Length: 290
Image 1 (cartoon, rainbow, N blue to C red):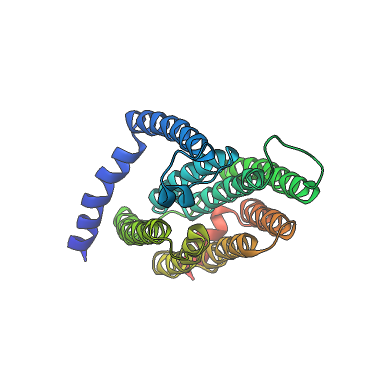
Image 2 (image 1 turned 45 degrees about the vertical axis):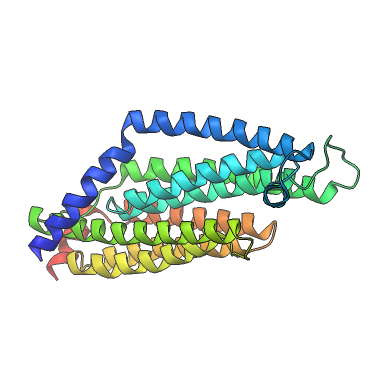
């Protein structure tokens, strides 16, 4: 098993370092700007009827679609960052999923813009405006609650483990992250292929979030091997439940998606408050001995 753990670390660490490097972030930011400008240019060509028939069916004729496309790319980048966050603490991984939820709500708000006429008129667009306000304020509230969640996490103290156990646990999570990255690339490639070939394709992020729920449960069960205490099992399971509510929020219709997202964030905050102030590190250690 030590060989497997070492190989997982050997593959994961360089990838993580390369992805999180500052130069990599600058290159991605520049490419994102170029992608947005090219999208606007291509949409304008499509509006003028200058694109071939096949390309014209793939591209929208609404300039606001370029905004949604750019935010979709941002969302993809954040999902990749989430995968690389998986070997970190469970609470940090859950926080990253709330970050993605807030971005999905923002993306949904901009998606509604693509349904509005150009130039924008309020008449006949009342439903879209309500959806934009709902998703926009929902994203803002999730963002605010996430700040509270992270502030509480800074005050919390985790359980102590032996260095060898910690290495094995983190290495196992790195192996899971690598498998999850493989599924992400496969699902993303399949979605792009179906979109280009004109086939029907489900929402990529919804499907991947279902996979994340399964991964969270797997990590909870894996953590029980290294943190067998009742406190750790309940805490990790509670955080996994909050991610399940996030998945329900993504599948829910307008307005209900915001309510479910806020409920998931509040649940995670209450879980953190109870963990930090009702269960002290001293209690954790005693429960480990029993």
